[in-house]
Image (spheres, rainbow over the protein chains, first blue to last red):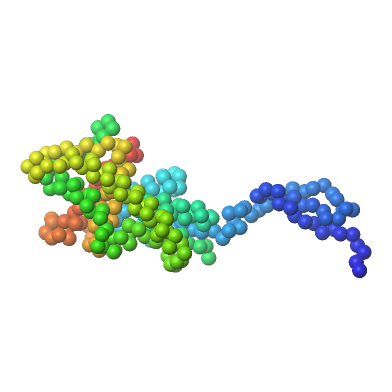
Amino acid sequence: MNAEPLTAEVVIPLSPGVSRAKSAGPSTIGTPTIEKEARTEEALDLPWHVVVHNDPVNLMSYVTMVFQRVFGYPRDKAEKHMLEVHQKGRSILWSGMRERAELYVQQLHGYLLLATIEKVS
Amino acid sequence: MEIRRRKNQIEISDLDPFLAELLRQIPASTNTEGAPAAEQRIFSLPINDKETELCAEWKMYVEPELRRLFQTATQTVGADLEQLNGNEKSLANRTLRIPTKHAEAWLSALNQARLVIAAKNNFTELELSDHLRSPIGSRRDLSLFQVNFYGFLQEFILRELDC
């Protein structure tokens, strides 16, 4: 039997992004250390892309306006994505949790853009 | 035809009967009935890999909401277009006034109409970008003109919203 005192550390999460290390053995209590949790809740879920596809009918100025409105992008960023859609056939507008990605796609469909969600491979 | 911003209105004046008729056709042009390609384009799927669960939920919950959204916009435009009711003679040199608070509805209805017409006619990218196309000689040419005319109106409204 192993007579050595317990020294393993258990991590108890306090809130998203922060965890506290706590000693499990009575003789090894030290100063609690605060660690920054590198992974956020969003990152724990495999991210999804919001992709907008090229469409020869929608006007370039209209697409730019929609990107500004839906994602709150400044005009130059919205234009960059619009040109990417136009020239490359598609552009990834946003990446993150699935639920929010679906909501963005719904908004984009409301503006009649061709948009889909894609799981990051 | 002249188009200008006047206070809280967008004014399209000196409309000839032909352009007035094209404007009056906006609500009817958004109709996807009997045109599966247009229906597919307006209510496109949210995912490419045919994830059946998401597509089924989308059809059940999101699509009816979008349908209502598009219908409301078309109804607003239809109400504004009542200014153009009348016979061909009375349409000469008519003026259409669009309240700027209806600009969003107009953008949506014009976009719906352009997408539906383009899908019904299966226009290619080349055709859609050929602004020097010869005068109208066929139903297809007329439809292409309609798409471009509605696009011109959209551009103007967008510019006004930007101001």
